[in-house]
Image (tube, rainbow, N blue to C red; front, top):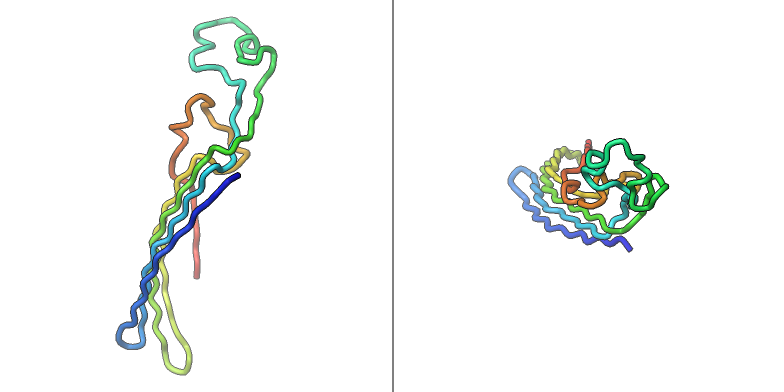
Length: 135
């Protein structure tokens, strides 16, 4: 079963002129995320070592094409620094601004992604695309 842990630490401080500043760190780690691999993939260099041979005759499961296997072996992590400044203005109005600097890494963005190299997934770990905007 996929699992995730999340944590955060936030410090808020009131400054002069009815202004507050908030700084927080947010983290999350996911393990056993679902992803897919082709268990009938050729080893690297197999085609070059056997020119002219039918690909289906070289696969681990002879005669079959790609065989997708869904498994729970992926992982992910998120780190974020959140900064917010808010100022109370007259008659109950207030103005604020916030900024988040974050980074996410994973090796299992979605179940539809098939690992490019079934036999070595170390090169698949990397920065995820994450766009978040708040107004």
